[in-house]
Length: 374
Image (tube, rainbow, N blue to C red; front, side, top):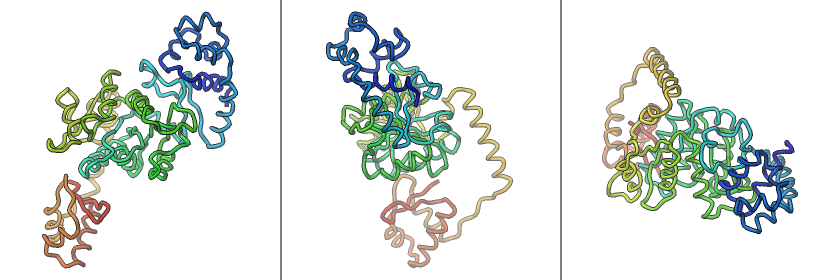
């Protein structure tokens, strides 16, 4: 690991020094090593607290930084500094970019593609999870990197859908990249590593404290062309992320929801406030920079032409059509309900459901629930 990376990490480990102030200091001194060689008077000109100045002058964080570099190498992670060429270019534009991003995974391709944040409620509805999966998968398959926060609910659905679509996804964490939160997403984190990467500005070992997540949210908003809010309650982190995106001059997208649902407050409010209503992947792509949009839409035209030449839609049998008509896009139907409503024998029911899944007409969800795909 480069020697100057230790200087960056040492600066990042100074307790109480915010990224905005550190960024201002770097604009003055250019390199973090110069900050540690500055005089008391020069440091005082930035109106730093006395304990912060003492920490910088003592150089005590250098030993911590050296140990940190060793730990990063041991777990196969690395530190990407604000001066590095592979630091996300959009993230450099915000007022307080992280000095260091601790990264774990295969993120080179994910960084090189256009990025869209997909965020929403932790306690997501079936409709919300399906919408997140559908849109994230379609966007990922078009060469767009899906960025989210590895949280329960919408975040999890977005990451998984991007992976299943053989696309790229990045998880921005509110803790160290060596700490997985929530614990049930341990395997998902491994999959995200292989299909993009885990990123955090927090040092290794940092726990998932509540105060970390608003800072995490600014990174999600800052490194993306826009954020897509699928479901969010009235007071939620997703609305904070959307507000940050607006402040950072990013696009804000929202999936409309049922007005009687608490989780629909956020996206419906954002739409009233000027966010773009999203029903289809194209609604997002239309707002991307012209060159990126043209490339994706041309790719889609080519795919459509090939599909038209090679494939013709397979008609549904009578039983398949009967079951398909019993299902909805925004509501699951349990297998027992379908059995009662269709009148099909158990064997017929199971085989027909399987055929509909193979034809990509329906999807099976946990608990033997089924939902229509279009």
